[in-house]
Length: 399
Ligand code: PMT
Image (cartoon, rainbow, N blue to C red; front, side, top):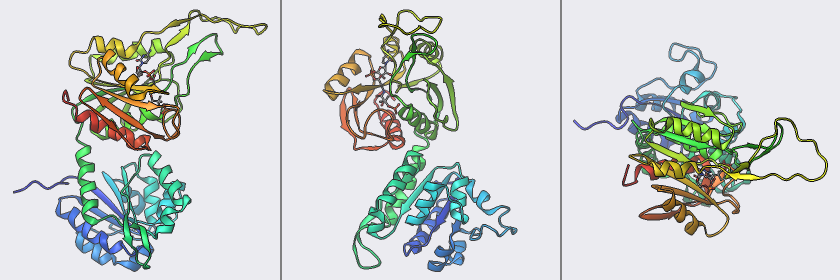
């Protein structure tokens, strides 16, 4: 007997009001046949396009349609359906995407989206002008930065007769996306991953420091993707205010020396290291005990910090080492030099002077270089880049 793809998985399918709602029937039926426990939640408007009875028949389970109905099937409907391994919204209207981006919870599906901690996949379907509208695009960007995934709609003839991008992606492509999503969740199972993130601060006196513009977003995204891929993850984080991703263990440090000590202490217990942190190359030779009084100029003598990653590369053993390279010119050449000098398996190069890449923003533009290949990735959210980095690690010859 062939193994079912999604045995043991709980999947909530949110259906919102658009003509493509009828296509959700095929997806729900397939998920059920593949062994998933499928709970369908429908907005009032979705119920105008396709009936709850259809979905109940195809999923083999009660369908939730009303946030206020406390019956035998659902104790507290929006909370019950929020608890799952995957929350799929198909079709996703511009309205549900906007509500999710703003945290509006005025009916069952939007309330459940606000309550869920499960990964969320939206399969948008709407008129091409609504999809292209800057408001919709900004909402998609906001949700992508929070880790939500989007299955891009297709281009073609829409219900109103217009031609453009907005029709629901092909059902077969949606099925493949869900299959890949669950496969991704096993990519690093049994692996232990150490990720560094954020800046380091090198103190001059108790109130002044030398730092840099790293927000930690890139490294935190890698940590989130690694845990989603089934790894045990330790995040060594420089000073930043981001929430630690669920399931990730975090050690907080301030200076490069503290980061080095924390990484070194854990090194033997982790088999993959990803250094996304922007580690200060220099620190003041002396740190004044009291605040230095102003008046005249100030001269600070800087001394070099250890290169943490180079040190790990010199003591590599069976570890897989992944570095980042922050450059402003000659991206591939400088990054390749670092790949070789630090004895790395993969280097994630970003041009920090390029719009949409590098420090602080929600997106990055990456050139991924390993000893045998170089790939240029298109601009994507840092959350998506984190997932792509994990996939690239899983494809390394030494993995
Ligand atoms: O945090 P964000 O705002 O999201 O920004 C993301 C980022 C720009 C910080 C990230 O994408 C990035 O490029 N991180 C690496 C920054 C950096 O220090 O690059 P580098 O080229 O100077 O260093 C090369 C590698 O050596 C890096 O993996 C770095 O962590 C490591 N290193 C550097 C210096 C040092 N003393 N010890 C190190 O281990």
